[in-house]
Amino acid sequence: MSRRNFTKLSAIVTAGVPLMGFSNTLHNLTSKASDAIQVNLFSKHLQFLDYDEMSAAAADMGFNGLDLTVRPKGHVWPEKVVADLPKAVAAMKKYGLRPQLMTTNVWDSSSAVHKTVLETASNLGFTHYRTDWLKYDEHKNLKDSQRLFGEQAKALELVNKRFGIVGCYQNHAGKNVGAPIWDLSTILSATANEFMGCQYDIRHAVVEGGTSWELGLRLIKPYVKSIVIKDFKWAKVNGKWKPVHVPLGEGMVDFNRYFSLLKAYDIQVPVSLHVEHDLGGAERGASTINISKKEVFLRVKKDLNFLKEAWKKA
Image (tube, rainbow, N blue to C red; front, side, top):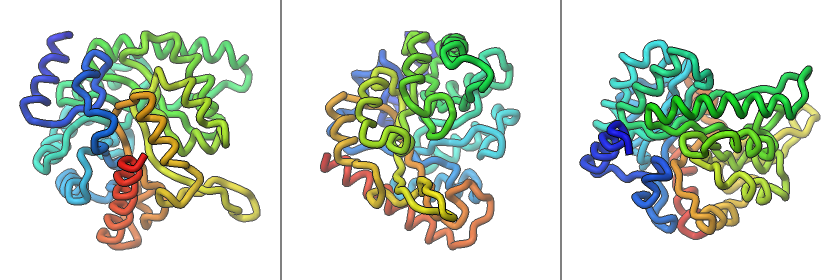
């Protein structure tokens, strides 16, 4: 274990902060899969609040941490990470929230800004981050593109290892890289699968996989380093069928089956709750909202309660 990782682990243990899946080497320190689930709230939904208000609200709702947006138009802008990320973390710790997970636009292993984001975050205790998304070039062969992305992922993993932080690529429905899951497994096979992996999003997996999503999970499970929780249903929007976000338990995702599989596969990784259904604009990361803060918090809390109960029952 590197001095950086040892220092980070010591700080976390000293603070009494629960740890879920810092890296494979620390796997035996994670909570048992049957324990109460530890949940981070995607801070995009509190973009209308400053660091202190955001942290206070998340703690009051019962979250263990925040999946902090460290990206353009996020709570922390990449170019200001050295000055602003410590402020955000100080506010989080003030209310008992642990720094663990963040969402970024990091992918370029040669970018000085991206390296600074990772180094700063790691020094502050963050263990995992979501990377930027990738798109296929319509003029290139898919296999050739996957080989290129695999090389890029391998290079980024070396940077991650240097700073002791795990990168996670999210599967997102549509035509993005990773949407069908099988391609992401191919890309990640080029890495050492230690400091680079997948942020598995069950909502997007079910949109693309339908009734075969379990096969995709079986394929990608060795690479799952963090997970996103949200739900959806199919609905007609302006005459066209589209996936529409809904509160947890009201959509297509079979959470009992999904959580049972996570426990069976012993997948113990950081969890991020995304609340993409109507929050008066907060679901989109708006800086101003058209419903009360109290109503936003009630709707988010409802999803968190469902998540905790569903996990307990699975």
